[in-house]
Image (tube, rainbow, N blue to C red; front, side, top):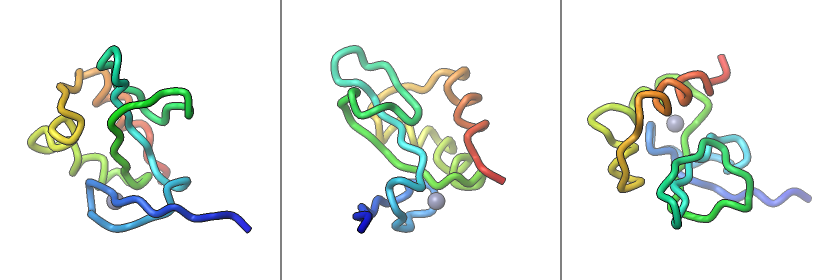
Length: 86
Ligand SMILES: [Zn+2]
């Protein structure tokens, strides 16, 4: 049986299966931010639903940046906005 690990979305604050969510990680060493990183990247991570409203919510008032303790580039914001499934 597949084990479900629940994570809280920072856009809507609902719990979802981690495998069904966008993971955004700030690598410890370089401070670089990755969207849906592979498991080789370790760092502070946040999760979002594949949902444009959750993505937009996380970008409001630099919420996502605050969670990651980092500043998001415009490029990264634009890339993140392409990740929703609708
Ligand atoms: Zn959400």
